[in-house]
Image (tube, rainbow, N blue to C red; front, side):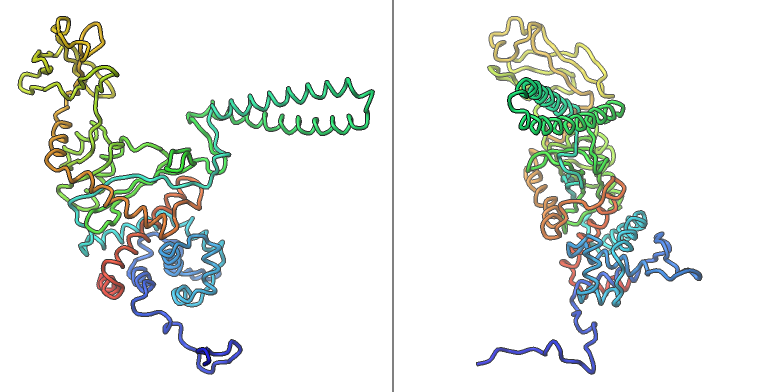
Amino acid sequence: MAYINGDSREQGMLLPDAVEDYIEEDNPTRVILAFVGVLDFEELGFGRARPSEIGRPGYDPRMMMAMYLWGYVNGIRSSRKLERECKRNLELIWLTEGLKPDFKTIADFRKANGEAIQKTLAEFQMWCRRTGLFGGQLVAVDGTKIKAVNSKQLNYNHKKLDALMKSEQTRIASYLREMDKLDKEEQTRPERMRVSKESLRKKIEKLKKYNERHKSLKKQLAESSENEISLTDRDSRRMRTSSGLEVCYNLQTVVDAKHKLIVVHEVSNASGDQGKLYDMAARAKEELAAEELSVVADAAYFSQSDLKRCEEENITTYIPVPSFGNPKEGTRFSRDVFQYDQQRDIYICPQGQELKLTSTTQRNNKQINYYETSACHGCPIRKQCTTSKNGRRIKRWVDEAVTDRLKQRLRDEPEMIPKRKTIVEHPYGTIKRAMNQGYFLLKGLRKVAIEANLTVLAYNMKRAISILGVVAMTDSLELK
């Protein structure tokens, strides 16, 4: 029995198929074309949004933007790869109407239209809000490290440079001692010694060049206000990831709980998350046009100042509270076992003694109160409570009631903290795995931010297509 046979590759066709016939009605590429078609590219600020009457014609920015969106949705971000796909991928041939821009033209479009791309993302976010894809009640905040175009070997800090220079100087000294030894033995085996000395001389020269280079980097680092320097991508920084230390950027996102859509995002080269809670939550509240908002985050975001500011803006926080004043080894009582009487402004210890306010200080723009008692000197369990000669001392932020209310919320709603992972990890998994975007292609914070905007736009579009379906989403966009 024969196989099913296709047409011969050499067979000519009198009436070739239309490319339209290859793109099904439920193909996500149709959503991309529909979205780009309803945008006002001149208002968004794209270059060449209106064709020039003089000069050589350029490519329509609508087509270029559609190409990039298709590429990011399908995990193809390189301008060279997009150029190649324009010649062989039926979806892209349909989308570009057979145009084949070269890789430099493709790359220059992304580089020159960063602000317009950011506004395009804002337009899609507005559409998501109007369509009801954002719940606008609960969001999760988190950050993830995305690798930069800079290897660990080309990232230096003071400690690494000192170690490299010390190693180079040690090796130079060792090679010089070997040369001295060869000089003494040269009379007996002159030919072999001459070859060996030449080899050592080359090694020493190479090490001296490295040493001078590292001295220059050390000087640059000392003159700057930075703690490290990256040679390939100057804005990138070394950060701790699940696989160890890598040179990265920190992508912060706020994800809406309803459909796991990214509400707002930010790229920075700061490795930590502390101090970002209020800024990200406030931006999300404004983006969602919500009067109230609940936000859940991990302990890395805990900041008493941020908690207070969130509470003032009707943002309810759910964050694990770190234990303050943990007992030292061999002691029993942490600060948590001391009861605070808000009306009397005193603490009561496990033995029933009162710790009264004795002094205040300003630290990091916060007023800190200190509570002490003289009863510690005669306490039978003093050694289980403190090793200080002056007795137990407790410090309390003047607005500690904000933290107390957070603790009470966590006790009343223990299910909130586990929700964080189910909300915020979904986009990261999709972006890094399904969309192959666990690393940046461009260099510098400004260009990396453009990439992040395209990534978030592509993720949200991909997610919206999954929720609504191609036909319904296309119809909704055309009615915009």
